[in-house]
Length: 422
Ligand code: HEM
Image (cartoon, rainbow, N blue to C red):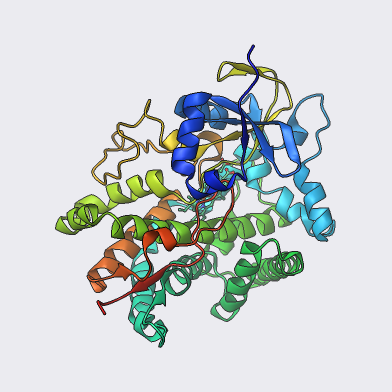
């Protein structure tokens, strides 16, 4: 067998343009060896659509290395968190979420959560999503810099919208939301270890207190519903599972959505023909446009590492039991074997009937729990933003927009726009 192709996930060129970078890699090799910081050699990445789906949906892959039969693989994050000073009291909340569960345990968690986090609950939120969006848009002109009239749309719109929505959904009181914004900023800048650690502590303590409060004072919110769920066998979420679930939902649910709104806005502004088309029939085209934006510039480009639970043949290679493998969502989403002319943004691209074709929300067992909510927020955000500010434009050339250099994520550092022509 030939020596495997190697890819450095921190390669500046790959971080700058992952779309073409991963396309080159995919055509070179369906499976490549990954170098990532001081983790190297034994990590793999799969790049083709069919293989990415397989890794995400086949039970021969597990999310938790502790679940590889007959092996004792240490979760690399354990060491990272220890070095960051996140002590043993708090680390489990980050290491044992629904994304770390496999098999029956995962099914049980998903089943219970789905009873509380229903399509009806998401749909019922729609009027509030519209209202919050409208209020944020109203306030944008006040946010303009007196120096050059530019507004950071990420800070003043794309971020506050999903955090406010998710807090309302879960039942986080209004007076505590400012603290969540602070924590989420600290988590974003994870290189500032001290702030990161303080944020984790703050979040866990806060959610624990909130769970205790909701047990005494039930309300019409997701947290109260999660406390009340049980399945046919009487199984309920434990205290630890409740806290972990709430913090996972809030953390997984706002930052990603914020960056879908940010990336999608840039995509539409830099493809005026597509924006024009969207304006001709927003009601019909918005769901498809969001589907396409998720494919073309989705904020999550790589799924969490999976571990082979047995030897598996994939991408023309034999992956050894216990090997970690990343499913590259960005590479799959630009695979010409699945999408015609994949680099073209085309908001009329058809999903397969009602099924999503892109993998931006993952696939299979761990498919995103909040996809319906994220889509709903993005649809409302784009519709209202371009309706309210028809002359919206970027305040800097698109190539000057800064991105956070993070493998597996596609995020802006800021999104300076002008609301009206100067
Ligand atoms: C899982 C993306 C919004 C909650 C995932 C996964 C992806 C993803 C790719 C699968 C990860 C993997 O298999 O390794 C996104 C994107 C979003 C978004 C791109 C916004 C544009 C949300 C929202 C919520 C949420 C709004 C909650 C309200 C979750 C949870 C999981 C998950 C709890 C874990 C599911 C499981 O392990 O079974 N998301 N997500 N996400 N997402 Fe999202």
